[in-house]
Length: 382
Image (cartoon, rainbow, N blue to C red):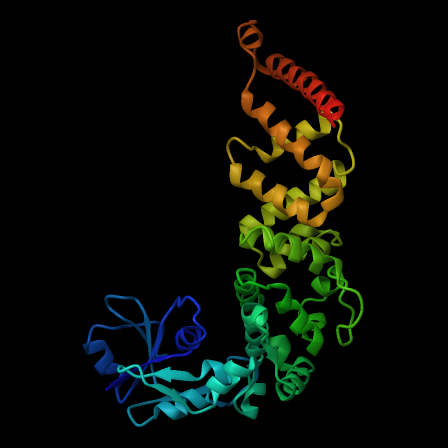
């Protein structure tokens, strides 16, 4: 039995990037031997196991042969006779087909180290075209490595265009699309995820509402930068919060929907991102461009800055990315409103004997008056 560190951990180590998850390939072992060593099998009879102490994934060396439609239509073969080189050749990109033995020696059967130096995202064999998930993965790697000049190799782009036009593309489930998109939002240049999918023609087929909301028409990506991409770049410059980045990228698509909740559900957008997108929709429809005290108070009370400070912070960050010019004025007003809401009611009101709705109405009137006075003072000082 021999064990090799493989894939992203080797790639990132060679690029001097932080190494996150570590994946390992085991050569010369059987499933029974792995179980006897205390490893836990991940699911069913798939040959991937979890280390009993570290939780790292240890996969038996395997080959995959296309035998059906979609990204799940593969026959997997594993066993002690499968060589490391065979396992590496089944992978997607040359830079992900690197391995390192226990002594730290590099095994590079696909010239991935050369492509790391050249900054190329290149497929290994024509079998790349058999799995549509690889379109999403290469787009995510462009988001991860684009800041260092990585680009899709011309031959790989030709294969991607053929994949984007295939029936297999539509076998991708929303959960898998959202999984890769969600990861892309954590990368240094998440907008490249959408640009790469757009340029090969996959974005319009997989996520037509997103393509339209970003202003990415069918074609080769030429023309002016899309508004939503520009907004995404603005928020990336100030926060690594995945939820804020997601909202900046998808708001243009969400606001075009007659039923935003249904659309977000169909895309499997998670709870935190949906909450922020709904807050932005409410702001866009009822408050944006209206800096009077009463609508500002209603909005801020909806956001609950005391109880949910992260929600309020995310809203301000996303709004500044989407509407930079109006928010020059509105952001300080919203922060001031949040301070007034957080201050609570004055003692004379709470001791007035008012109760229930009457007390709530009096407190709201006091907040409106105080905010109006503060906004006038702020305007006078400017």
